[in-house]
Length: 318
Image (cartoon, helix red, strand yellow):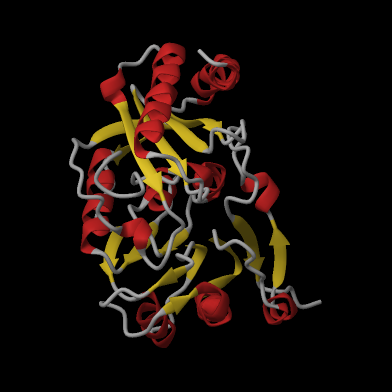
């Protein structure tokens, strides 16, 4: 091994020694082992049970194809050596800078879904089919918080993806929930997660809708929720939507509408992963805002800019 790959392998070894024990104590089968720790190796490496999700970040570096293939092979060899898992259990994705709704698009690769456990909940994941796996690991602390505060509450999950927040809310004792997404694929995935965790569809409903339209109708119908999670994509131009979603431009409208549905003592968790996103001062004037980004980033993530997160409540009248 050359000096650079040795430094990479040593870092992997050091990380896994600490994090494997930590994950076991936390009851986690899905966690981040490496997060671009060594600049020459721009990868995120996540463990999912007996499998590895290896993502290369786009740096713009230029390499000859044969040199690149040799470099990737060396990286995989180091991962196999350190984890003790077989080469065929590494699922490799080259990540280009995201544009539009790419996180929801198919990769063209097929592999079997399998189940991972997190804090006593079970989730279906797939490490090849889409750019993302079905479970956003960086939102684990907020999921736990939602689960811990859900007992006896009415819960709303907007831009719900595969419904992991709803699984936490329902298993945490929420009396009812609505899980809203525009994608049939992800709502079907959410349904499978519900079934896996024995969640009843009578109290816990899955709703296929454009979130903007859903909010409009829910406000008109005077619906009320005690806990709301809203984690919109940075940008979406889905053909199913009436309009293009741009989170920086549209977040005031989204938050305002969601707050009309929030009970007087309720909490809205608003999060997104747009680099450079700035919460509008309008929102800060209208509502009680708490920036919880720092505590919402898991211990296994070195990238503290992976998302931003706020707890938003109604201002209390004195």
